[in-house]
Image 1 (cartoon, rainbow, N blue to C red):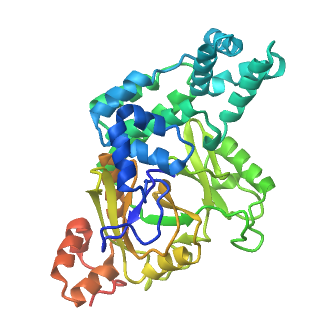
Image 2 (image 1 turned 120 degrees about the vertical axis):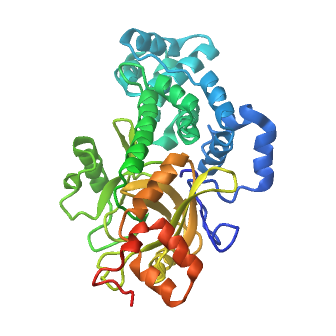
Image 3 (image 1 turned 120 degrees about the horizontal axis):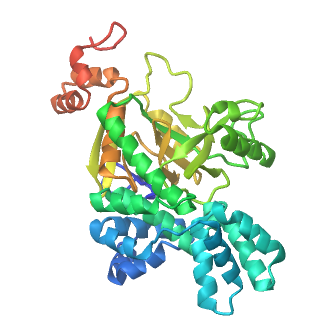
Length: 429
């Protein structure tokens, strides 16, 4: 998952008991981290090709902590591939080279080109002269699909783009811009452009925050019904996938058996899951539309889903993170959701975008720190959007009743609209 988003308790230094962040390398031992650092950029780059999601994520975070030194290392290694027909044809032809190094280099190039090479690869898979070329073409076609089937070079490139986005300096953005240039657009160009788009969206949100909240949704489990008739069969999954291709995230693209699921934009790399797809260079994950989610449906005005406190902070690695605390009245919803779904993956969202995905291994309380691979302005944009949402009047009233002056000050600082006083339905008395 992505930065193995860890949700760490704000009441303890360690992560919440048993919560493994699959988007923010959690539970990485100190010795493993030290080994990666001793190995230097070479070791870290190699680790980003690992099929073990948590190891690759940890390596990416280690690289991101290096700032523009990491940018220079990525710029040296990652070059934008050409995707014109003549170049693609030469690359495909060289899959049958007698030299291993040439075959390997062409396979890596084609994996970064992606869809523009599909037709040529299909032709080679069906009728290349050598069995080796046919086999290589078939393998590359499979690698163009789910991330867990990607080639080593494609996995490294995906993480490298996330690292450049996290660093978010003039130089890292310049490198992303260069990677996004090839025409027709390659897979790598699409990844780089999506990163630049996310950074631009963060700027827009900082300039004019659109009110939102933090949400928690479980990834579908093929072995469980989340609601009568809502089992996500392979057939229904294909319908959802076609709906994404044809209509984007428009919920009307879902099966007719009810809108139990919908696609969400994944702002992080995802762990191996059949419920992920891509469209126009962006990654999406299929999540429950209402069930197995927090906030749950049907909350009343006297039991609102409140984010009592939220702030952009730095985690222990010095990377951007988001600290949050739910209102006391709704903490039990998140506790119950995690307690009853041990071992499953859960996404953390803001404004309909997935910030991170983690594996649930222990119940979560209502406060924590979301860590992963996000830039400082992205973290600030999420915080600004949450603060522009519904003010936490219930939590503010409880802080006043308890005469918790420090908490009152923090809440007024984070949610200035609380200065305007409660509405007639607000609980402050």
